[in-house]
Length: 115
Image (cartoon, rainbow, N blue to C red):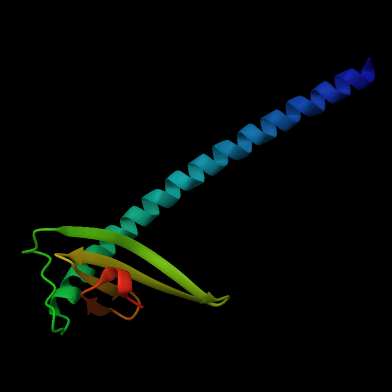
């Protein structure tokens, strides 16, 4: 009888711990989405300005574009110690990768065949 109570108690504690873990994960992901949206909004104006004034044979026109899309803030980790962030915009088939750290924009005409 005592063993059954101990097993039931451990089982209830396990369920409570899992529920707490899922709740904390849900709250953390919500905060992370909020921070990401804030950063993307902050970088957006800089990215548009840098992309429009970047020299290129294919002009990038966000404000006068008919089909515009924000791909978003992405990061690549080539090794354990380096993170490369970029913000990608697409306007009328021309894409622009903006590096918020270096404040540099690269423009290309084929989004799927880029480096």
